[in-house]
Image (cartoon, rainbow, N blue to C red):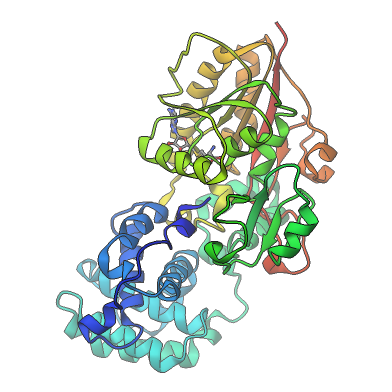
Length: 461
Ligand SMILES: C[S@@+](CC[C@H](N)C(=O)[O-])C[C@H]1O[C@@H](n2cnc3c(N)ncnc32)[C@H](O)[C@@H]1O
């Protein structure tokens, strides 16, 4: 249910290139440049930039293949910016001035195509030079761009050699945190896995024949019950999409609702619910779900998703730090906003946008959300807390602080078998702690899962 995949839909009017007489392939590169500028210059999350840019008429007029290429090129630049700048810096005689940020982006995309996307050199270099000429005052950089990218094509791979990609691309503050929390070896595995593109995971409605659906979708069943397909799958082309037989959701994200247990005929408050992956699971499993989120726009997507899936939930627009509906619930699920450092495979912009201060800011928000969630759980009820962050302040530290302030709650340990996982995914306290390097499948491209922290608490009085 990612915005990126959803955004590929849309009308298909005449191709933009005919209208502008631009060389083939240039429009896709120019779109990629706008996506990257939205993140690196305007500092907006890639998902937001994609949604906005793909709605523009020139992007909507592109073939889906070209929009897919633009997205893939932008993601590669954001994922590999450390390596790209290293190579470009080797061949540039002087750094670009600040006002040439757009030229820098043309160089980054040219180098990414040469080093990581197997684009023929004449196309990668020629189109980067064309794009530079179209930037403000760009003509003066065209010769330099041509010369630098030709050297990248010829010698760039040798510059990268066997140097460790993870420590070049992952910001030092983040890598240091992972080393401190997980140890050197696991931190390296997390970083390596975070630089791979995530495969596509599909959640089936409960009660269907999973093996038959896996075959129909040309995918592989994960131990957790998702159907996994390669990253470049076009969702809309798959059987069962229009009929609402399934939805897109990372395998690790499915574990949150699973941890809630049997929700049949139970009242469930899903706080921070949009775009609705977990709401869909809980409703499909028979829960009477109230989905709460403060973002009306994201709730629109939740509503569309539920409609496609023929599922129902009460939908409430509210701030979950203060929401008091005047009743309690059997189950409260809080999938809190977080730094999302467990989802870098699918959101490489996190590498470029997040700062250490964000961990502190979001941890305070999570504590406020947890404090209000506590009031919403009825006696004997269950509170499930989750984040897709790898940072302990957003995971286990929240639960330690919450339990000391709320003695009426106790932790209820999760059994690996209950979530189709292995013992390595459960902490000594009984919480779930998945990592991007977990879940080995047949090939590296089909392996991995998002990094999630999930705790289950029971209110005993
Ligand atoms: C991690 S996402 C939730 C993903 C969702 N649970 C799913 O499975 O699709 C976090 C959500 O929290 C919402 N949010 C952030 N702060 C909030 C608050 N104070 N009250 C309610 N919703 C909030 C955001 O709008 C966002 O939709």
